[in-house]
Amino acid sequence: MDDKSHKFAGELLEWIKSILRDLGIETGRVDEMEGIIYTVLIALFAWAVAWILRYVLHYVFLKILGKSKNEILRVLVDRRVFSGVAHVLPPLIMLSLLPLVYDDYRSLIGWVERFCWIYLVIAFLVYTNTFLSALWRIFSSSDAMKDRPLKGLIQLVKGILIGLGVIIVISILVQRSPMKLITGLGAFAAVLMLVFKDSILGFVAGVQLAQNDIVRKGDWIVMPGGMLNGVVIDITLNTVKVQNFDNTIVTVPPYSLISGTLQNWRGMAESGGRRIMRDFTIDVTSIKVCTPELLESLKSVDFLKSYIEEKQAEQAAGKVENTDNSNGLVNGTIETNLGLFRAYVAMYLRKHPFVNGDLTLMTRLLEPTENGIPFEIYCFSANKNWVSYESIQAEIMEHVAAVAARFELHIYQNASGHDYIVSAYITAGKEPPV
Image 1 (cartoon, rainbow, N blue to C red):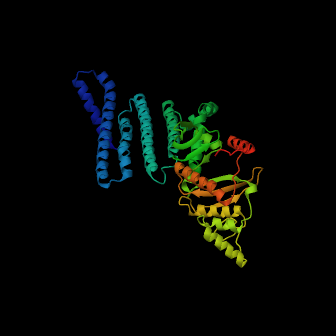
Image 2 (cartoon, one colour):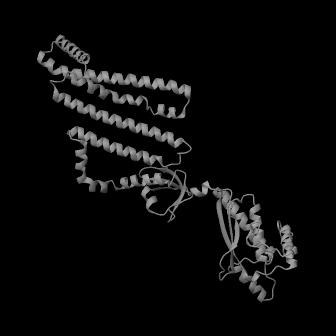
Image 3 (cartoon, rainbow, N blue to C red):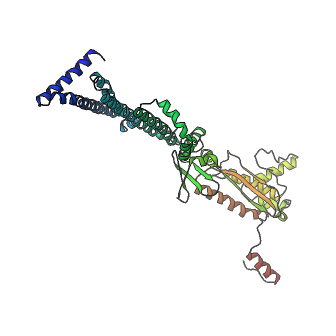
């Protein structure tokens, strides 16, 4: 410290002594009280400086915010990030002024300095947490980062800082090196891991979730068992909250998303469509070669007249495209009613206004079963909204099931009670009911 600071401190002490003597206090008592009063005056001075600086900084940045209208600056000002730095000034001022005149009161100054250092550590931790919260608010509001699980990472950093702060505070109280204190904690490591097992697993899982971008807020996720099937509404250090589609809220630990099987529908939401993959079984006995009469009758069906005529022209010219045809139709053929039906369904899907024709689209036959030949539709709905998707899928299946009869194809289903009643009427020689 320079001579001016020592001179100021000495003059302040003499002023305190003179006031105490004027009040009629004995000299011995004056020597005992001057240190306490000096400490109180320094503390009041430090708090006054910090309060004035905090007010000035907040006022200045409010004026700047009024002119710039910057959203990041608004968050920082609202969270008092700039003015909050003044909280670390009081202990710094006291630590710089106390040693000037306390050479004769080392025991007192020792406790006061410890208090100031502890206050400085706590003030720094509070300011750092405020700053991290402001950063989280800024990043979570941006389009690029709003879906990232930043909340868990921020909590992780805060937890680490608070743990270090606690160790430093304890080391100040016991006057030991923080490194020695950390080394001594090794004996309690097993107990700490047992007590804080969920928090430790949450730490690790939170890092993995963020690093690998496994889950974001707003993702639709599904886990086996049926308990978890909904949208992620919050991700924290110890919990992930999911709102199921029945509006129930399910809370799971983050590590369960890492250790188990998880289905995330984000890829579907970010793609160009939602997959439709449905099949029904064609009765093998209804499959037959197309006759000229059947082809002629099918020319009245949408899309088919030009297609049939084109294929007939190709047959007459000796050129027939089947698997690798220019229209992208799977086995585009007019040889069988099933092949023609597949060609028609492919054309119908390509012209459907709510089917994405830029993604995979096909109609195919699966391996025959004892019930017939499975006929599968594979395409993508352009609308990914759940209600709209189900409506589009139902519309396609209804149309295909209804139009199959035009191709003289029968869709197989197990016999029902109505079928047995019709069979009984026919056996009895009566007209079956409709």
